[in-house]
Image 1: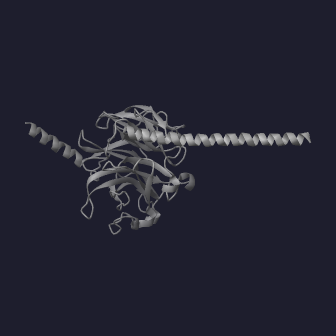
Image 2: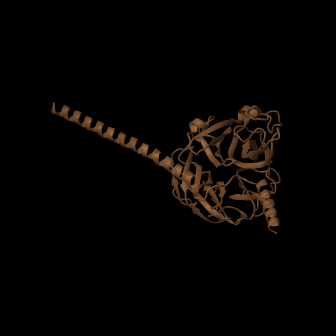
Image 3: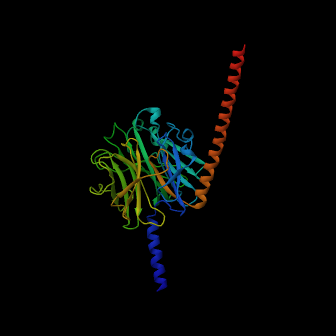
Length: 378
């Protein structure tokens, strides 16, 4: 009997692992990794409960966008998760700087990896250069002319253990995002590529689905509760809100979203940039998103059931300066404390420099006053 139960447990865990999504680890707190609304850069915030956060580095850049965003010098829509083997972390960002270009277009994405969440290396993919930037340049291309591409938006990561490379190796990071090439398509559509285990190579994009209208900001999770992939996504135009769609397969079968169960609270609010995560020890979900039509903007977190449906009880995120489109990741106590210590040390250095600057300004003011007094005495 015990042997039978053990075999059943092994089969069940193996079945789940075949569908395994991004590795979850840590029961101490959460990292909110996000684009800052103060600028087009990636910022960090820490939380113990998933709702109340503390800015790291006073909300300043955790990663230098000038170093890693080689196309436009801006990083938007940061999505972070653990590496597939638990050894390190990977991140994708939209390489875009509206403040520089003054248009809502961009041309590529940045792939980053780190061992400690502090020091990062990266590669940049400028899609205007065409198929030569991809590791399978001779594969069938989705565009005739890549130089006219207008958008490569909001990439996210999903570890796919079943993906098979041409050399027979299994396992790859599915990077999914929306693209627009105006001369060749009428609206933003969802595409996907695969990155290798080194997180430095990327396959040519493939169309994920086309519902006949623009879609952006997809967020995919696998739910063991119904053994289906669930996608939260914004429809551009039509009914406002963040909708949910499901599929039995990761890269196929995405039917249109459920029409009567979606994230839309407080009237006709415009919202986007969803990120679903689970609280430690809880099989229900939290869905975070930005209400960008508000003035000032509101970054909200609402509840959903274990099937990622029945959205309710939205509240504002607390303690974050300039929260925007981003993602959430669970942390171990060691990781949490390391980030906190790193931030405290950096802020302490900044405070010392600020105090020195104030002291110098005071000294300069005293000298100027002394000179003025001497001139008056003459």
